[in-house]
Every structure is written in C-alpha cells, then in structure tokens.
Image (cartoon, rainbow, N blue to C red; front, top):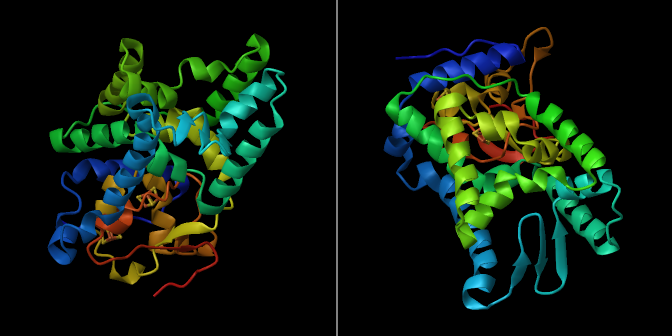
Length: 310
Ligand code: SF4
Ligand code: SF4
C-alpha cells in the first residue's frame, strides 16, 4: 500500500505524521531487506551504546567505587576537572534568586555550546534515559496497534518551561528537580526506589495509552529548553535523496516528531515555494531513526547549509 504524504502546513503535517504512524505497524522491514539488519539499526544501536556508556560511567562510582564521573545529569564532575551543569537547572537556580558558583556557570556554558552545535535535542535522543522508556512505549503502541489517546499541542512544553521558572521564582528553589523524570529515572536505574520507578512507569503509561509520543515531544520542559538551545545547530538531517522516496511512511512511523519531516521530504513549503531538504525544525532530535528505517536511503546527516537535493 502506498501512502502519499501531502504538502502540508505544520499543523497538517503533525496530523499526517501521527495518522500514518498508526498505519505502519512494523517500520523498517523494507530497510532490513534492502540494507541488512545492522545498517537498518546502526543509529539506534549507537544511541543505545552512548546512553549505556553514560549510564555506566555514573554507575561505576556507587557500585564499584571508581569515580570517573560524580553526580548526575543535572550536575556532574568528570575526572575531578570537568564540571557540567544542565542549563535548565541553572535557569531554575537563577529564577530562584540563588547565585550560582562560577564553575556552575562555566559548566552550563560548555553544555550550551556543545548542544548549540550538534542540536539541542540530541540530549533527548542520545543521552536522556527517559528516551529508552518513551521509545519502548512507542514500539509497544505500534506492535499492539493501540490508537487511543491524543498528544497535546507541542507548545505545551514551552508553557510548562515558563511555569517551572515562575514556580522556582515564587518558591525559591529549583521546582522541577523534585519531580524531574530525567533525574528520577537515572536515580531509579542506579539506586532503585519506589517513587523514582513510579514516575518512570507513569511516563511509560502516559506515552503508551494517553498521548502518543506525548512526554518527550509535548510535555517535558527539559526537552523544550534543549530545543531552544538547538535552534541554530549545525548538525542536521537532510532528505537529500528525496527523489528515491517510495512513500512507505516508515520514517513517519518511527520519528518522535513526525511533523518535522514532510516539508524537507516533499520539497515544497506551502505558499513559500521550494523548500530546503534540510530538517531545520529544532524539534528534530537528530536521532537518526529516519536514516535507519528508510530502505532507499533518502536521509543523511549533514550540516544546515548543505541544501543539495538529488
Ligand atoms: S523517506 Fe524513506 S522511509 Fe520515508 S516514506 Fe520515503 S521511502 Fe519511506
Ligand atoms: S526527522 Fe529523523 S532524526 Fe529527526 S527526530 Fe525524526 S527520525 Fe529523528
């Protein structure tokens, strides 16, 4: 069955992507047949390796007494030298009118510079442990053919970001950090604990039954912060070989933000003429799943100024 994506406005694109994602139960089968299993999963495997390596570094200290990295994803110290601070934590600290130490400011500056280059939401797809939970929920949704629920508007996460900063200003402490599923999932994996596992399970059930791809794509204010940081990022995915597209819709089915694909893939931006094949929407997580599952290799990583379309 061919599914022909229309040229769509962003709102229509969102509807289109979600609708088609629901129709494709086993995306990537054609890619496995054409390229082999390894090539059809290479960026998925690489992401899991990176996530496990980061998690393993945090685990080495508490479990084996080897303190290469101390702390957590909110604030960490590597080899006793490199301090990294989550910019969202720093923003909450500033909103709460606490004066951060210079080292925390430098640590946040390093994180911002890195993600401003490679794409802010690279954190979501390549680092954050919640990504494993939400990817699992999306996979199970597809396999079980669940069509219940509806994702809230993507702008919700930005409103939540503002609300968290306001709550920090009023309360005088970093408000999100008491409920942050990112640090709670990390804590659940390392130390266990009922509350931490409960929050992680709630995110899974939310994405599985209530809102498809709801948490990362529509709610999480950490993701919103990183999306803002990555607005002008250099590293991008391009639908360079869009003429090869056979409209199987597998890329829409696996993409956590399917509304970012149609304009780059179809080459026309309604009312604005020809569009660049580069996906410049900061919601794109640079996860590379569209590259993996596309049999005819339409997508590739490149930089934002590479507008070649062949
Ligand atoms: S870009 Fe690739 S995965 Fe997406 S619809 Fe076209 S052929 Fe299918
Ligand atoms: S467009 Fe591709 S790289 Fe970007 S979020 Fe979707 S699947 Fe991931």
